[in-house]
Image 1 (cartoon, rainbow, N blue to C red):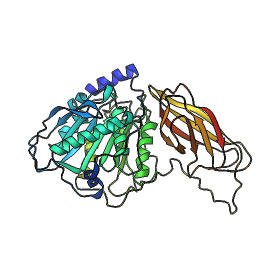
Image 2 (image 1 turned 30 degrees about the horizontal axis):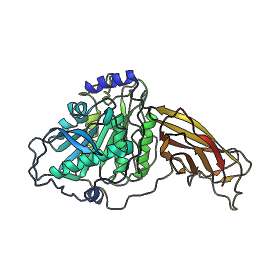
Image 3 (image 1 turned 135 degrees about the vertical axis):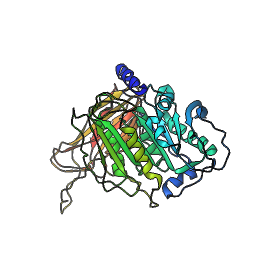
Image 4 (image 1 turned 60 degrees about the vertical axis):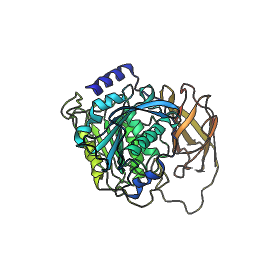
Length: 431
């Protein structure tokens, strides 16, 4: 029960809350990755070659550092057969060895030698992804594996629990043309989300009373891909406390080839919930089978050839009231107030409320704030920022710029640095 043991020690130390959200570099594997979106199987350079890689712990130089990963090559490997490739990211204070020992979240025994598995090792046993270093590691490992082994480029996947789920989410955001689908177990936005505007098949799993990463954090990650994948927004049914069950929902209306699935379970922060029991168990959990079904559905289903959307829809519902027949007055007073939502070692989440304090409708607003030394915004929503350090200006998003008298709206952000010092010098102007 290595995952359960690790969970208990992590909770006891309260160390899982949380590591620094860091920015992620764009780019990736280059031309070979295009096969993931054009729907054609591309043979990697390793196809047809006698492999030099073997199962076991491998070392690699990435971003100028010595890194490692555990590789599992299928029994009876055929160099002329393209294989599925799955990355399994470990949790905070876990390790690549933990993931490999537990059968890559239970998928290894289900794969029937159809899959190459990789378990990377995080720095300090986590995935801070500082300056995109862990995304670069993902790229470098993928390149090393695919140059030596035969991989189906339409069949790349990633999954992980807790911090490993955060890293899987970061991969989905930043490498949408590389990975076909991801599964995030009890995750949150801890490793960054560079991009996050293109569709990727997504499966989120979360406990309804998660005491480490609240289920609202998992829902937020899910909703990123509900929007990106063009699914019909809904509030999926979730089990009641004490039911000891789970409820899996497949979203309707998603673009062909880009499903979104959500499973909520009656439980806490664990990758191994068991229906009918309050004790997690790696060998009895339902998660492995559901994840395998989700990934393996793409065996003969490749993404469509249409260009994915590149703009991000609003994270809140735009106003639906009928616009006036004459332009409303512009300008007027507004005020901005800040509150700290959450802090963790090396990072924090903040929220700014913008309020119309006048008697006329505001048509547009701009908030300026000054971050303390060492603080830097890594992601921001419901607004458009200019700058990430020092004095930052945030103007309204297209859907929340009109504020009637006494009305208000909010924008939020995550940042690296010490969250104990609140941003100073908040001002609000309109238009």
